[in-house]
Length: 190
Image (cartoon, rainbow, N blue to C red):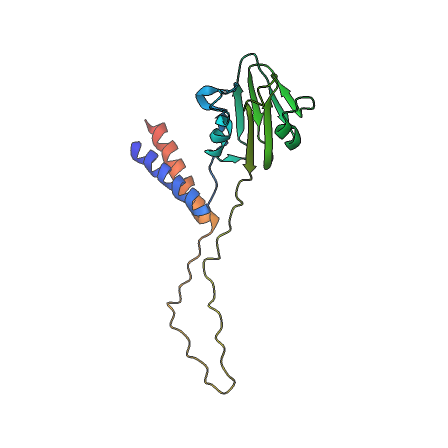
């Protein structure tokens, strides 16, 4: 039974590697890690900038803000740099807020508590789009033709084995189906 599971896992791994499928899941980042979302100390005013600098944010990820007696405001760039709390895009004040990063580009967050933003409780993150799936080149590419002057003899054809190998998606899926059927047959026999 364990050999069939191993075979299934190995087949799936090979299939995903060959088809170049992205398998990275969305992440939820806890803002400030253990510090959470709070007014930083006098010597730590750039704590959230440092926290964000060590991370890569992708579309689909989310930010989790944990706080007490405070709030989180998503604001535009101008409001972020001027700590303006009067015109937020989104206002959270429930103590645990999750913000889904649903588009590429900049996101700006500040505290809604008086003077917290001016004392460093603000966060800027740059969200990047997931990289596009790069298509593999065709299995066989013809070499470029050589330039030959009109009066030169034609080159001799290169030797060939006469065998063409082609890998199609079906030829990759078939071993997975066979492995799965074998796994089901073995588990029902037990």
